[in-house]
Length: 244
Image (cartoon, rainbow, N blue to C red; front, side, top):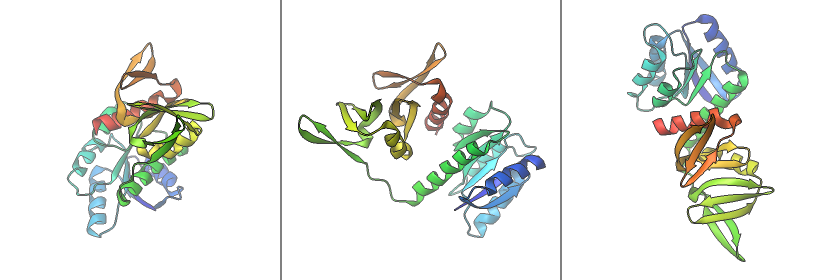
């Protein structure tokens, strides 16, 4: 269960955000603060008491200590909480991710979008509390022999009906598994969906550019097209990784 802090200088917005957070069964406690300075005091009290704060959901434009400055101050803490910005302004996304924000939500906040942010927090907390994951090994059939392909060697995967073709630096291999199953299985390992038929290891993406309004990622020597449906999420995830 998660302990979070909601921060907004506008009382109605703070009340709405707090209400939505308390509806999520993964959240145990929601503390509140009306500005950045009060948020720092709340965080200090929590840490002095020996309790845990997993995430801060905060506005950016606030009087005095704004959301970006508050986040900069968090770097001085030994184990700072995750930060999710909740704002009416979409022009601060790059700056937010440069500061290590886990997510960036636009007001009015949709419950399903907030739930996705909470999921990311829960996954981040789980990863820090568990031992390092062992690199998964996928057995593939090749010329009557079984070869073991490690997940970390896979640069991207493509759907081929009921099969998935795994691409690595030294070749490609077919595995009998739907891409949807693989995408869910490898989501927390840094693989992102760029198209309904393509899954890419974010760590192997060297470039993201736009050609005629269509986003394209470069993986090794390959140029892979990002569908319009997935463009914004791919861009946001790559900004978080490249700016970390």
